[in-house]
Every structure is written in C-alpha cells, then in structure tokens.
Image 1: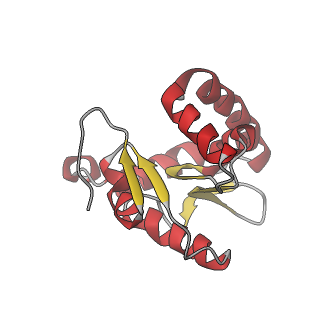
Image 2: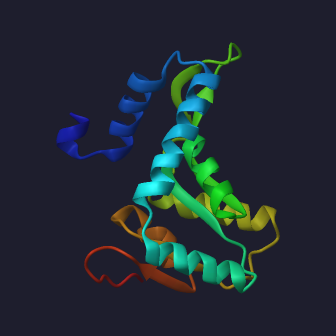
Length: 160
C-alpha cells in the first residue's frame, strides 16, 4: 500500500526495517565506509564538488542535509571536509544492533528544514545567509528557507 500511495516515508521505514533490523553496528559502519567510497569515486557531480570547494574557500560553513543514511554520509562529509551532516539516522538497541527504525523518522521534505533550523539555532547561526542546493522535490522546503536556493535537477524549477 505504501508503494501504491507513493508514501516515501512509509517505504523508507519498511526498507530500513527489512535491511537493517538485527545487524550489528560495526557491520553497518564498515559496510557504510565501503559504500561511501563508491559514492565518492563514482556518483558525485563535478559541478557540485566545485561549488562546495568554492564555498569552503570563501570560509563558509558547509554541510550535507539528506534523507540518506547518516552512516554512509558521515564518511563522505569527512572526506569532503564539510562541517556537519544532517541525515536519516538508524536507531540501535542496547545490544548494539539496529532496531530497524529511524531516530526521529526520515530526514526528508519538511524534516530537512526543521533539522537544519535546529542545527543553526544550536550553533547560533540563525542570522547567516543560507545557500542551499537540492536535486529533488524532497528539497522543496529546504530550498524555500534559503537566501540563495539552487535547484540542481535536470529541469529548471522555481522555489519560493
């Protein structure tokens, strides 16, 4: 039913439970580091990397806000030299095994902007000029809160 309704949050919950439930943290972390290498080597857009490097050279704080799993985004962020990663996070039980649930749900759509606003507040950066880059409809709210929104998808879209 989740697929028929195109409910991405429900689909992610089902997939997360099916793939991760019961796996040890160490196994997930080592597989995540391996997967992050694939992403770094083969999946990143060169124009996006150039833009990130420009922001870093200008002294801007940079980060990744994504619905993807934090376990593989953190090694990517570390390699790219970003200041923070906000992502969907796996929940672990006291035994060190994944419960199959996400902490605070999927970091998608309005949740991205909510979490970024919280991060900005905690770090006393609410008054900064915000540049945001997105490539999907799940970035709409994040782009709408930015002073400088940039949609990187295949077709031009206006975000307001």
